[in-house]
Image (cartoon, rainbow, N blue to C red; front, side):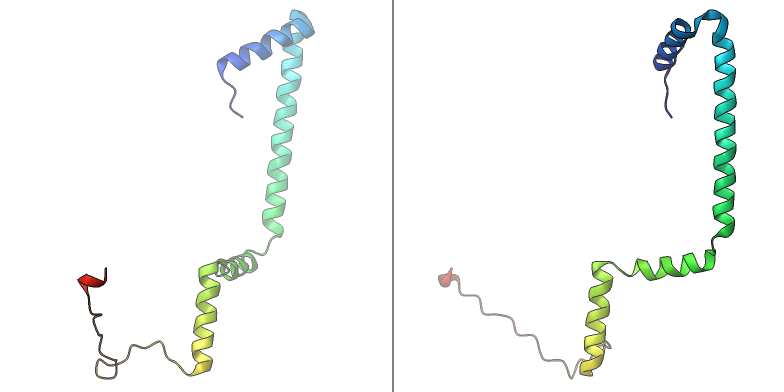
Length: 110
């Protein structure tokens, strides 16, 4: 929560008008106690959730989900299709590769 000095001053002025100068310190103390209680409850809930979660299972699921990107799915599909077709990912020897032929450039055709 980002409350600047101007916002804090406006809230204090409204509190002073609504509750009066006699009850304002009492209300501020009750508000501080409420905030402290809520932070303690949030910490307890976080600790309980952290303790009840199997971290190994979560990390395994996270690893599986990282591959579910369009690039990862495409790579898997291409590699499995290449494996089914009997193609290998290893580069061919230079002798078995077809020679690159440079296209003929005709300046008159452009």
